[in-house]
Length: 498
View 1 (tube, rainbow, N blue to C red):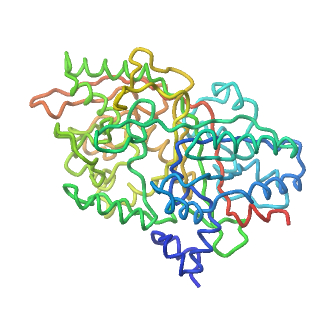
View 2 (cartoon, rainbow, N blue to C red; view 1 turned 180 degrees about the vertical axis):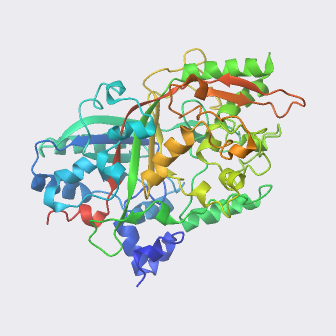
View 3 (tube, helix red, strand yellow; view 1 turned 90 degrees about the vertical axis):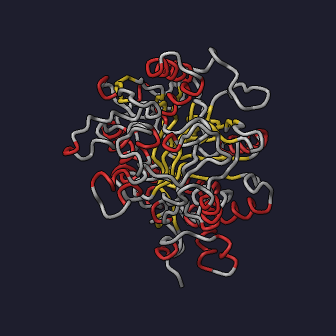
């Protein structure tokens, strides 16, 4: 019999579950959306409070909801059976915060971890977050959530129907809905012969560089990488143990779950676009369209279609390379050290800077991201390739519902935000002996009020003799709410309190 540690030590092959009883048990007890994103374009996220409920009543509610949650195995089977193998019907997930576990009283133990026990709002000094009083007034300032219900489907009407059924049922349980956050994935068509791709409201492809720990996904990715220049210089393969842990309240030997971060991030699109234009003028004088695109890519690290800045050669590729590293850009001449994707996925920079034997330090904090955009969809051009709201871009009430799974909040999300995104020395100034200036904070998600830490060094590496310039880029992403949760095993959800 394979134990859980052995299953989590190598990428999981869900198709092998047909003949492997232990693997089948694991996948049937794990919630959906962890091993692989649910892939649905529409979602609703209900945040609940159990205030005033007795532990037995909370347990009864959890059991009832658990009976309707989707397992990882069911998700993968449905995706496989229904072309295009992404949108295979409804997905329902259920998460508990530390407050939710405490509300269960003697029926459950609290998952480990100081950050989880404290909750996200209490970790604002660690993260550099704004105080709760600056979060959204509706819902997020009224109380701390005990639970989160995630509903997802291909069609908005199906999500709404599911949502109305659950709202009606909750009315008789004693639980109260604090806030409902609807998600709608925006898409752009970057290539006439390719499918539209998911983008965030600034217009950039989102979620391209994901860690893969499902064998079938890895096989497909490696086929694509084989056609890239340089191939798999940066491997997408990760152990499931980086994202999945044993459920301390599980009812089977293979019961597992994952720590889950939810953050509502409002995007000031108009401000961001204006800052991109100002940066292009400061760098290039009267910028061409290509130079304007490059200025934005120097902030993000990729062009809007996902092409990595470090690989840009002026040509539009048929497929976006993703096996790249920064090995041939040690001084940040092609892709600035402060660029968002270099800050949050350094791809060997740490190993090179500190002369480490492997890439473990670069890879260990990587999370399995499962975000979706929120707010009114931005209008598109007739061919779906460009946003059509220049001068009218949203400044409030739209952005990204950032969600991610990990085995440790402290070693995953909190480390990434504190030691990478918010750290003005990361990554180009890790070795003081190199004598380099500070990098500055992540211009997209870095959180600091220090003007000097928002000043970044830019160099047009495509222009011979170009002189570096230090320019500021303000923060246009603002936290409006969020919490830490745990995604329990289904065996726990369906039997707690019995």
